Amino acid sequence: MATATRLSPLDDSFLGLEGPTAHMHVGWTALFEPPMDGPRPSFEELRRHIDVRLCRAPRYRQRISPAPLDIDAPSWIDDPYFDISQHVLPASSENLDQAVEDCMSRPLSRQRPLWEIRIAERLGDGRIAVIGKAHHCMVDGIAAVELASLLLDPTPDAGPGEDDDWRPDAAPQPLGRLVDGLGDKAMAPVRLARGAAKLASSPGRLLSVPGDAPAVLGAAARTLHPATPVEPLNQPLSAQRRLGRVERPLNDLKQIKSSFGTKLNDVYLAASAGAVRQLLIDRGHKPVSLKTMVPVSVRAEDEAEGFGNRISFMFIKLPCDEPDPERRLRRIHLETSDAKQGGDPGLSEATLKLAASAPRRVQRLVSRIMASPRMFNLVVSNIPGPSEPMYMAGCELKEAYPVVPLAQGHTLSIGMTTVRDRACFGLYADGKGLPDVGRVAAALERSTDELVEAGRR
Image (cartoon, rainbow, N blue to C red; front, side):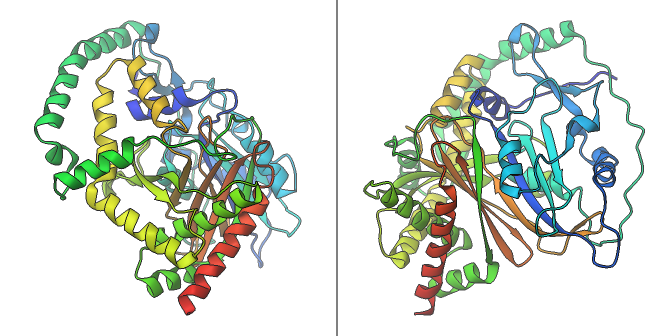
């Protein structure tokens, strides 16, 4: 049966944001320890391991199909020419930094499913690296972790699985898609009017915000207040990418959280603020407060393994102007508490839903405005990872560093994920605008040390 799943307005917006130097893929760099009491799996065995599990993630066998006459968002359809060898490839180097740079500096081809995995069979330290990326229109950060986890098992001796003899569905007829698109467009003004009326008559109910009117107005002010572009964080992008990595015991962050009575996410943001502060000082700029976008998952539990994006956004002032680490943390805690109480994520979600009923050109304009350095300076994202031991073909997962994509005009993003008792920070940067991202990673390490010491005091 011919099927096509149309991209949501948010998913479609990530396609529209992509350009020659703005590669809108999310990703990860995972490091595995080969089995001590068994053979090391070969590249072919690992590719086979991934291939037979794609039945768990059917979107990985689908490609983008533009709508007839570009009347609406593209759709996902089965790729009749799907070939695993085009998606799971050997890494270009045994040097991890070089392999990551080569993979992440290349955009994904829209002629086939929008994902790719590179495998380094043996790094210099003997470990195995799996470097993956998938287009943001396909998955958000949490979904990327969930989909990556489909390749993992809770025990080292799990079997590889069986081939599902997949056959692609036939592509839907263009005429049928055109009729559906025209019908949907005909209803758009009605949905837009209804959405605007609901927003005007009952913003608290629409946003599902428990706070009062001042809190809602505060959320609107935080979201819509323009940012001031700051060098070197906000400048034109090159196509080159680099990934700085920091690994810390998760207990360090938990101890800071307990010492000051904050949230774990506050600690992570405070460590990031200290690192960016040092970057500005090193570049000869006066440290300033930065408008920071913090993605917030709105994915329900029953959508944990779903595709597409289930995210909204919270905007806070990252106090890079504050020299004292404890005061940075306390300021961030107040910011995030106010944002959550005021319903910032709900406001962003409502704005996107309202824009979804507008013409596609308007949707694209809204998405470009929301991704502009005039809207925010920096993205900082916390992505939960596995809390129990996980294995791929008998190899234990030790570390995983997230890649948070860079929209045009943004040269740095910071992501954190957890692997058991480790916190893994991925600092994703433009290789030309921020070639010294390793120094920023070292500054994040020192910033965390300062918070640990402040907690002990």
